[in-house]
Image (cartoon, rainbow, N blue to C red):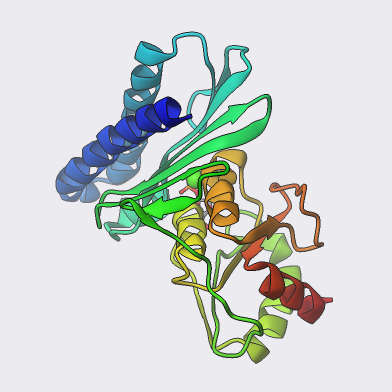
Length: 256
Ligand code: 2AM
Ligand code: CA
């Protein structure tokens, strides 16, 4: 597994460094209508091909599931890739986005890597070996109730019909927690739960590549990941909830 993690780290760093360099040119395109949008799509695809080429040089047979190019190949090992998580932030020049790479064996995530190039923070996890930030061991927060907690969330901005359902949960949790954050990168939200910077994270309608690496990160840091109905074998497409095991239960009770 260490060999797989090393390749995932190499790919994530290369792509992240490329993203960071690319922000410098963003201003030039902002003046044109759709200019910045098209530029970011190009950057996104290029970052993805940097990652896929790095993997293919080492593991040419492995299967890939990537946000931009979709699913290709069939193999016991599958790499799940989000080359730019936090696209909206990136587009607007907000320095909060990441590269997320997971490696699955027979459907089970074994390695997760999330790289934040802006802060040069590398989050890594290998199943059974814990989670690290720049090689320092991570642990989820110890909060036993919502009191004094900060919860991170994402708005259902692509599916605004879910706003009433979202607001009901938001209101219930906001009553008891200290405050909420909406930073705009689900991969970093999960990495920050693993790091204990935020006590929990919840969002609707995410994709596999947003959460694959982060979910392993949280569980290897002692946390729990499931959905807002309490399913641990969760359907990420519906919702995700991550927190320490006790707080996870407290949140479910509060929103029920
Ligand atoms: P992205 O930047 O790669 O698009 C923000 O709320 C989070 O939701 C980001 O992690 C963003 O990933 C993700 N996201 C946005 N739209 C999405 C969609 N239609 N499906 C899945 N994830 C989405
Ligand atoms: Ca994403």
